[in-house]
Length: 284
View 1: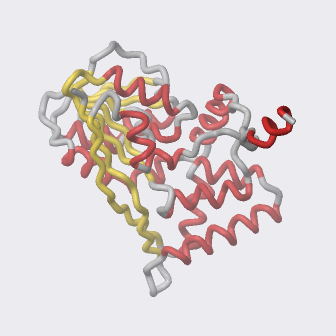
View 2: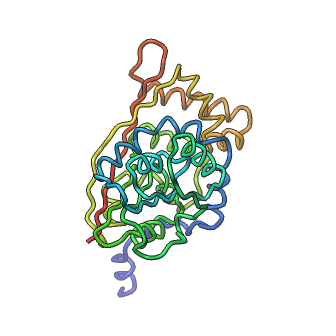
View 3: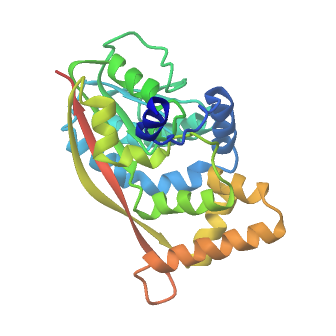
């Protein structure tokens, strides 16, 4: 009877997932971002970097690090404000696109290949650390957050732009996950677009302030967007190449349906707002 009572009182088993292989996941993600050419899409997001630098009240002469910089939207925005900027990414080809943009604009920027989870810089090396739609994609989210905090000096600021789970890009990744499920236990990048996750990552070492913002994707048509993203945007490009013909057709149909839910254009073009969180973490 005692054993039966103990069994009855025992909590129900809690479902659990094995920890993902973060090294393998990083290699997979790096391969995705190196495929296609993110710069074709990234350059359309320039306004996000400009807005973030204004929100940070960036000052001339401040030491700025752009993490997972892609082709350099936040990098260029900071350099235009006479900051001393270092731009980093783990895809060298994207840094080269950023370098070409900086040279075309006559801006001085240092470019360096670097992993957001193991930044090759000294502790407290920067006044401001930036990342626009970049660090949120790291497999080891806690380690990446620790690195951002480590290289940012006391009283410095960390500024990020992160897609939200319920916005268009968050739903894009959710839709792709229905066709190509992520590894069990892998954390969603879109969690960086929630206050709860940001507080868990940063509130113990700084003050977290967020503001919901909108970036609007403007394309000739939904089909034009699909052509651009499946050709140039690494994760979408990789998803299509991994699927058989019938799977590609099904994914195309679901993505066009997703655009239909968000599209506010009525003239055949695509005007799709996508929510993101503008984040400023201030170190004590």
